[in-house]
Length: 481
Ligand code: IFM
Image (cartoon, rainbow, N blue to C red; front, side):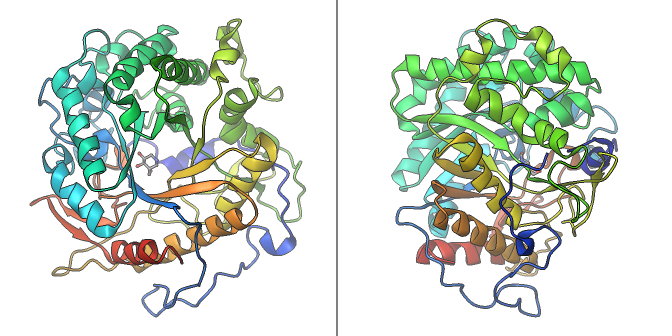
């Protein structure tokens, strides 16, 4: 195995407490009011009586490489994850996404499952190498047809499709041409997006351009734990700019397509706090960490500038006149993904201060979701927000027909409670998607971490809704926690 994401966090100097209007009781590390006591198994015992707005969207998310499998079918080309996962030592256990949860073949059954859970929204991603096997040129009709069938199946079941254009599976042919380090990547992406918009533009009410560009930049280019496996700060910063440019070009392609639905990016945001409770918001390193965690992506998209305080010279060197105008092309909504806070020690280093899930990089701090959502509103305006990922992995085991995952229920309950609190304080949060619908290929961790609310028995591909799925279904039915 290479570096884990936790090792990364420790290695990364982090740092700026945004103006968090937190009273002492809200400070990370203070004992927060977590609501009803958990049962002896750890699962919450009674409803909290918190109603969500009418028509609040209840969803679950997946991504193509993580669930589809069918890696060589219907003309799909090779992606960088097909390549990377075959390199010795890159992925735990040598796992690949060749079969994954076999969703490509079992999508109808999965759609029925979503319906039976009561989901009203499903976030999936489109595999670029299925649409353009070589990353450029004539579209592969069979690839497009799969997503047309998927979208039709969602509509038939009354579930709103939410499609991400890029969730990390870059066509290998484009990596061979330089990938995101190459300025042309923005144009390749816009061409691909245009093909998809032409096929599906108005059938999908919400489009997401990029999934977590920060993870691509840091984990893929800076620390080499994800494809394409580079360890190069300059390359990472160059890739960051081109990813953002690609986002802007895709938004422009969307407007030009005439489609009248909505589009935005999916950004993983992390509230940044000083590890020392007595340190101020301007403690050394805190602002810098906030820059690299959040503002490097939010500022160009929503303000048309890069943060002046960050040392990102390699990025600045590739910015051309007009780029920031493209990147800040007006979006319709912001997709926020929240997993963990970041604590910054006195030397600017990342500190693990709270208990983590089995993903060691994931410190669990539900209040951080409230801080992130209200911070976006305060610093970037009153835009509509959807939560497109939130969840945790656990060591789930199938016992007969049941999978008990009380820790996940507690996690989801606590985070939804903070989402509700943010709505009550004026955040225009319109939907929530748990990560993930199904257990799936968790990148460098292979199949070792189970993130789904539905258990997948990889031997038989049987799906078993975990206790958390039943709990979530009940929340959806009541539209209340
Ligand atoms: O599985 C990933 C997903 O692909 C992107 N966001 C984080 C998840 C958990 O690590």
